[in-house]
Amino acid sequence: MCDDDILEVKNLGKMYKLYQKANDKIRDAFGLNFWKKNYYKEFWALRDVNLQIKKGERVGLIGHNGAGKSTFLKMVIGNLEPTEGTIEIKGKIQALMELGTGFHPDFTGRENIRTSLAYNGLNRSQIRAREEDIIDFAELGDYIDQPVKTYSAGMYARLAFSTATAIEPEVLVIDEVLGAGDAYFSGKCIERMKNLTGNSETTVLFVSHDLASVQALCDRIIWIDRGRVRYDGDPLTAIKRYSDTVREQQENKLKIRDQKVQQKQAIILDKEEELYASLLFRFYSDQPYQAKIRKIQLFTGDELLTEIEVGMAMDNDNKDKSYIIDEKKLMCWHDSEKDEKGYFRSIDKNSGNYGHAPFQLGITKARKAESDFTLVVTGELIKGSHFNLELFDQNTGQYQLLKTLEDTAPLEVQQVKFGMEELFRLLPAKEKEQMQKSDQEAKEEEVPAVSEADVEYQDSSDCWITSAAVYDTEGKGKKVFPFEKQISGFSFEVEFSEEKTCFYFAFLIFTIRGDIVISQVQKVTSKGDRKYRIDIPIGDTRFGTGLYTASFGVYDELDVMDDSKPQSAIALIDRGLSFEIERPLEYGLSLGSVLPVLPIKVSAQNGGKCGCSSVV
Image 1 (cartoon, rainbow, N blue to C red):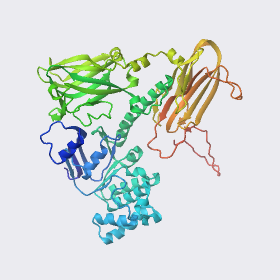
Image 2 (cartoon, rainbow, N blue to C red; image 1 turned 120 degrees about the vertical axis):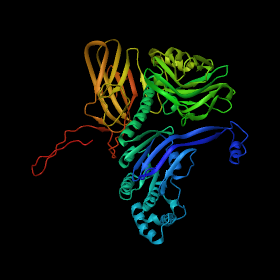
Image 3 (tube, rainbow, N blue to C red; image 1 turned 135 degrees about the horizontal axis):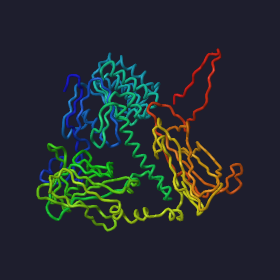
Image 4 (tube, rainbow, N blue to C red; image 1 turned 30 degrees about the vertical axis):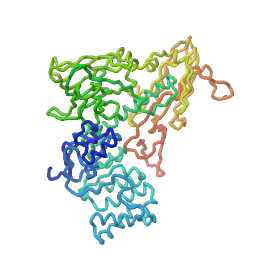
């Protein structure tokens, strides 16, 4: 460790034992299972983490829930012992990990302050000197002399943070507890942490899902994903890369939602299983085989759809989309190992009762229509071994051969290509029927509208909407837009059964609460045609952050002044086109739903010239 380093982590990993039986856990605690094999499964929550953090650095940790951030911090503060690797710390650590810990619920706020400071080694005069500073910063008023058990989560966060930062520790660890406080107090906390690092060289490790707060405080960000460090460096770059993955997931979710709406399936897509299709593969042979598997990747063209880094953290996490299935005694996967090339798992026919090593790859259902896929397996076969790579047929309940892998050449990478036709053949009958359903059949089928948003998609025998899209400034269809690069417009294509010289259309945009923010009704006249494309540019109008849905309807007649007449649409997408505007990191205030550019003029009473320009 260098002189200016306060924390150094080398090859850090944490493994949990997942027991098949509760009794095995008890026996293991007393060392009574030494004679027994394969009674638990290894789950690596964190692996191969290497970091050096210097004095006075403000380091943010970001990542999805379950990525391994809290596990890492618990090892740093000593609440968990590493399974492998080392942690070296110079200095005293003060940690705010969970609300409800550290204070006695029956003591008043003032009594808990004194107890906490005494526990940290301060004498009476030092406690008196810092007590009032803590009380002033927490701003709890008369509640400071009330029992802590009467406090709200926000009040507790105020007291806990104020007390923890009053002693100026060498390392301050904060894990999400500030999320319980209000925006005003969170801002105070950010400033206090900046002052700590500037004045006393306190090092801050800060975990939060509020990316704006992380960017405002930290001069370095570590992105942890699936138990390993994905990026370590510049805050803006880290947030952009992390936000790109979140945006991609939301983009897929909204695409599938709109497809479901337009196919008139009466469900709202909030569940993960509605977004992804699972492909079950296995390595298998009726003859003995051995191999080391390091990586499994699925591509379409040059684009990586999903991968499993075999032997790394969370490679067997069944909450993920892609993972190996390594049930002890049944499957042929061995525990994770490491050699000079990196991490891997061995597979051996004789190590599992079923004689196979299965794994699952998840792809978004929107990608099922790709023309071809390439499965890439990286590893080494033991000399003389050969085994099959097979894909499970959900209709017959049997595995189908894709390719036999052999050691005819030194195996580093073996590729298996299979097309859409082959994948389609193995889909369950229900999904196959859904994909085969023609647009005309979908028009004739009567299915209830989506209950949550009253979404309706309807055509008639005279008119139908053939496409609907929202696009960015480059003309690309998208679903999720950064606030800084907003929507350019919408496009719709309409087809009539015969030439049409006059029709009406209505276009509306709703917030997620159902409020109308944009409404347009237009009459179209022409010399006559069957097909029309309608482009609706947004211009300078911008949207505030949040989720929106759009409706588009075509009418023979539409009188907005007289609601007594029947005015049924001959083709309609009712709240079936979704899009989302991301929250900008630099704005903390609510921006409203629609932000039109208004021709504002400002004049000074003394006649002087005034300048006026939009800052949002």
